[in-house]
Length: 203
Image 1 (cartoon, rainbow, N blue to C red):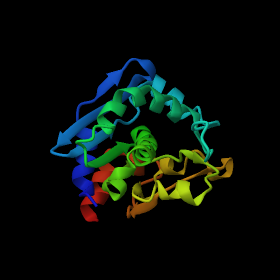
Image 2 (cartoon, rainbow, N blue to C red):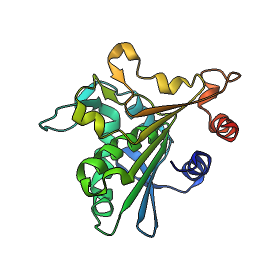
Image 3 (cartoon, helix red, strand yellow):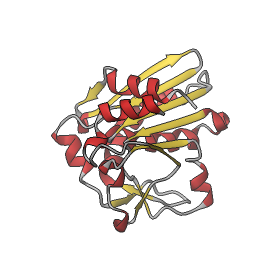
Image 4 (cartoon, rainbow, N blue to C red):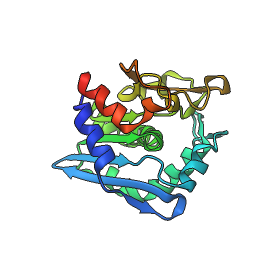
């Protein structure tokens, strides 16, 4: 597993490219045969509109049909055509994906996309969602679950965003949960970057 403090630092401190359509923000880096994909937190009204557009929608018309948060899916599709050439590059032998908050939801969707489309990399794709909201609706199926085996949801204390959309609406976390200890921060404060930095330093 990558160093979470360093990875979070790179995720929140780096400069992002913003696409006008859906104000989708991303950054890519390459280190030898490793591709890094980073996704930014909410940074405007359009992002919040997509955050709150949570009715479930089919991810794709596939054999294994599954449903995701409609707003996050919209932003994912905006970025897919830009990132696909990098992901499909045969020179890439390892992929690390990271996002914070809104960006964590996109990291989750791109993690699945990479695992599904680059089976040659098998266990060399790792995804990290810091303060990740719930993205997948009524998740079922062993084959689908396996695609998220190396995706990590990082939750700090009582971070409110990681509990949205509500469990009662049918949304579920997928992958593995890493819980950071933060007994002092409120549910809102626990989501702030500085709270994650403090908790990651103590880990």
